[in-house]
Length: 99
Image (cartoon, rainbow, N blue to C red):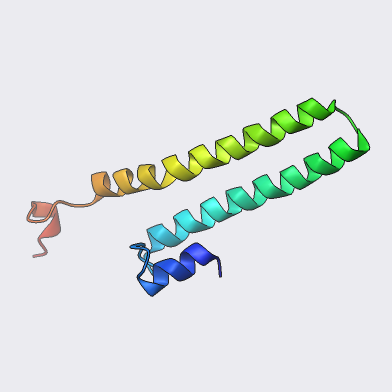
């Protein structure tokens, strides 16, 4: 189990460890970072073996991936939260009252 999920479930992180939106967001971000680190390992191998590109090109691609991952990690949870609050029924509205 990833560390952010453990923290969310323990109640220390303010996350909602059993909340499906939290779990899906955590899964997506963990998958993205796993992919980025795997690609960076492949890029490091390519750089050592000088397979296709110049060394500076491997470095540039690696840093671009890391920066994109950091931006996504900052942006995506906020976007999910804002989308969830937009689509959630307002308390006291006709939609939230059950007949």
